[in-house]
Length: 168
Image (tube, rainbow, N blue to C red; front, side):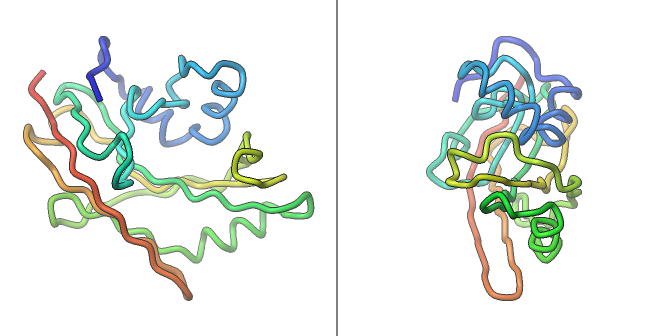
């Protein structure tokens, strides 16, 4: 992915972590052109999501930008699905990021209402994100490997990408 023409700010990176599924989805519902930071159309506002084969895999980012290493979990169902149902599923997840072979400490957002469940075949949905906002310079120049492992009592998921941090 090509670099954006303007720098990615701390506020944009924080918004990607905190508001992707509600404010960001609202932006996309009203305009399929992602102008607002939380919508983060494939990294233009700083997200790095570890999905092999996605536009994030192999993307180039700038060393002087803020970035958010992040993954979302969306849980939902029919109209009877409640916040407590989603929270129980999400709270049971263990999410571990590894950056260049080293554990990456992360935080999890609160469980929030997901604003656009229809494309996922859901009537009602809630989500939380796990991730870390990275300041300029925290990601060194060069190629990086990012992996994520998600486990619960009955299943496990693993994915991995590489991305490149270019000089400013």
